[in-house]
Length: 319
Figure 1 (cartoon, rainbow, N blue to C red):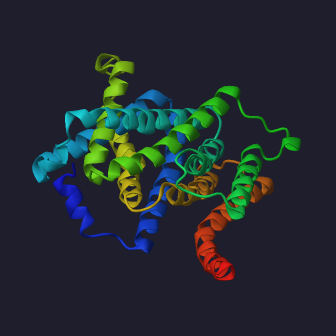
Figure 2 (cartoon, rainbow, N blue to C red; figure 1 turned 120 degrees about the vertical axis):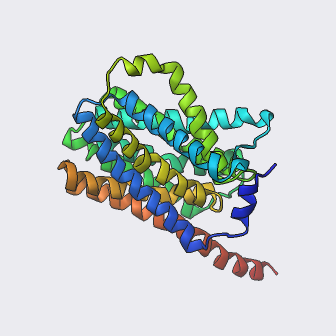
């Protein structure tokens, strides 16, 4: 079943350029949000409350808006709710928590670069599990380059003796797995439902999950001021509502692997913003590693074009 909002979207497909611009803008917001989160953590805001309020307040804002604007976005068969629940808890709640926990325990650069190995997992899934994509030399080369680039950028090179706390490494890997999951799962959900229906239910189930972990009375016991709630609201809009709206809009038309590859631009934005705003260390070795990741993105993006050019030539040789 497809909601009325989904039908409206289908009549106005964004151009290919606009799809990528939407996703790149989302990564810019995510990259900036990482530095904002680090500042909040430095001011003694708890990771849990930051994560919980960003999804909960985004959910409430969407519900209030569409209760007046278009109530058809709420129409979802009960038998489909479990899918939204799984994607909402794993793809939104757990992705966000593990990601921001890694930021708190290490650095923005570490958290964002580990998480952005997710496209590698998406590609492996597409090749080995769903078999929607074929293996080729360029993809293997890109995979190796991305892994090496991420390792060098995160560690700065083993010889430099830069270490990552064990818990931060575990949470970072978990955030990568969860992000890969939402790249794959959200594409499937968006085939039948609009961006707004998807976001409302994903945020809603993420908010419900956090209520079991951190109930309202526990939140009220902290005595947050009006200023605190204003900060929570602003961060929710900037860090999840706007970028996820852009992300889901682009995901509706892009393949998961392409979307994942493009999202790896987030480390470039995040590291630059963290360097400019937080004064975090940025070495030449880390820069070289980030360049390796960018090179991997470029290889993966030109691979389909090269294959389309080579394939007809091989076909003509065989004939």
